[in-house]
Length: 360
Ligand SMILES: *Cc1c(COP(=O)(O)O)cnc(C)c1O
Image (tube, rainbow, N blue to C red):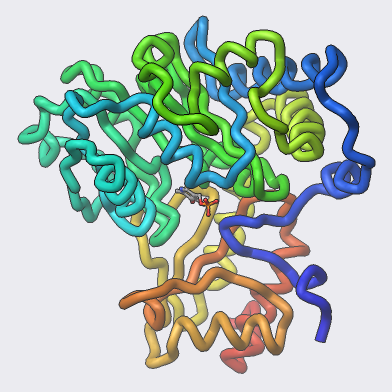
């Protein structure tokens, strides 16, 4: 049995990191209150704005925290008591937005949905809301919402569109200008394939105007926007992860974002095709390139499959909790994936079912 960190990893965060990222992880953390580090942060901001196709005048807030902090900080800074919030809830992460609004005593509609909102007409009864909260990819079940339809809905009803793109940035289509997105929340350990600990919120000029006056310390966007002008953060940033981010973003810009989306798409297709002859079926009809959600069609428990894959084959896939525990498991295609790497998992699944791969 190998060590925890030597296993094959297919979870939707953390994901398999690139060699270059791992190398940078071993550096001595340098001091950061200087011009040299400011340049690194400003370069990251510029590349993020480019990749997200953010409107002119957009800015990035760099938070030292995991993605949920990005969600909570966006809610705290962009929503106040007078706002009417429409929170899309298609699973665990939608539920989290609702919970954040509740904790902060904000007026939010908990809008439970079951499809990908290609047809937004079910939202029409909430069109007097002025803020939309949505997770572009509801990672708990693997549903990618139709951001183009949603974009028309928010534009028509003049809403501030706050999108958690944490688990689809880099692997799936996202475009702040064309999809009318005002705040885009991303984090380090999903598609960007970095260690956890950094969350970023990209703000359009419209969102920047909406930022609430200071009413908290650590997550006050006013302070981040002010210090960010010179490439600094109000508090100690995740310095090493920012160096790793700089490297990743330069690579993504050099390769072109299409290259990375296509790569994830190709890996996802390869995996889905290869497991077709197993007694597993795709759980969602709206899967992103980032991840595949599978459900056993025989009487096997999804949770048991997850455990055996770990214990016997050193492959870590993501289990679910609650009433989906025995029903589904999730396989990420984010990060440094290759066909050879995911073959380990495909072979493990065939061995587990005592079936021969390549035979129909
Ligand atoms: C992973 C994820 C988050 C952040 O979760 P953390 O545990 O805080 O990193 C938020 N939203 C979505 C959709 C995610 O997939």
